[in-house]
Image 1 (cartoon, rainbow, N blue to C red):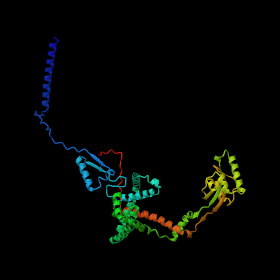
Image 2: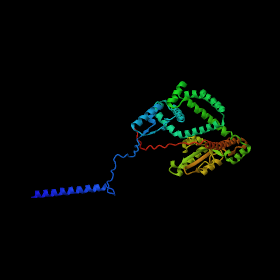
Image 3: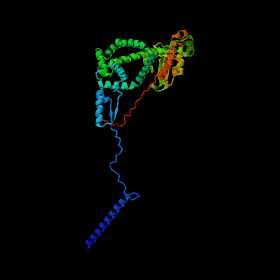
Image 4: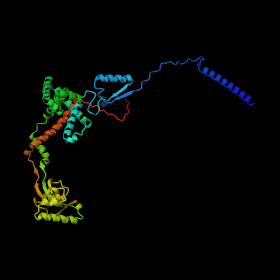
Length: 426
């Protein structure tokens, strides 16, 4: 009985599902018709879509780790072609790490490394032989890298300064004058600098020097000569441009300077003196300290040498030197009472009064005293002339280089590397 009932229910459910499917199908067909009752055209599935941009596939090339791979143009070209074939479409090349080398042709870094090598060699040569033997090449390279990184900004600015000076010289002189001067300075380089460099790097001859410059400094003898010639010209041109306007100095200018700066030509009163000192911190009470001081004073008054008493009994810093203080200028002592005694007490006489300061008790004896003196104008003229020239030269130099910067604008591109930035690399 129950089985027949379930069968009838199953047939009924299947019938309902068939009707429902038919309704949905008809509804879908109507949806494909337009307002006029006609069937809408189907959308083709093969319509061309706009091309999607390639996803960046980046490679970062570290200069320090790839100097050997990027030593020649052929090697660079081959490496870049391989990267492109592999699928990389963005390549970032670190061309100048802070170690004194560069993947590009640099005029500055070889000179800076040479300065660093010279400085390190001088330091190493001053070490005892046993310590010198412990220094490894890796340690020397590390110190050289640190030197280059620290000195590079200042060295770069000096090179820019020399370049501006050379440009000014180049514009001011005729081709014949330039060639003549550059040849004369170049001959001096060949005659003096080349042998000095051979000796500096502990080499045998010029051929070894050329190889050393190329392998160790990334430079050449021709480049070193060019840089040396230009730096010498820059130095001489700076002296010509600045010093020539600084030499003239009239009598009235010197007298005006002397009057305005009289204190610079006046020496303060000064004195050499000896001291017996008893520190409060070394005694149980001030009374005990005073008794010791009185005893030392009596010993000196009775004829015993001041130096011997000070060495054996004084608490002062100068006790080992017999209590002697070297030349002391007036106004330099912290205690006014002690200063008054040093600069008013008769020379060679032991003070009769025990002097008290915050730290202890004192007895003094003035050994020598030089009173305040003023150098006469006639004796100060040489110094005055030099000081005026120095001040004028500084002013002229500032004005001259401001003019050079206006004539030859310089742009320094400063790199900022974020070492925390995530980069894709091999």
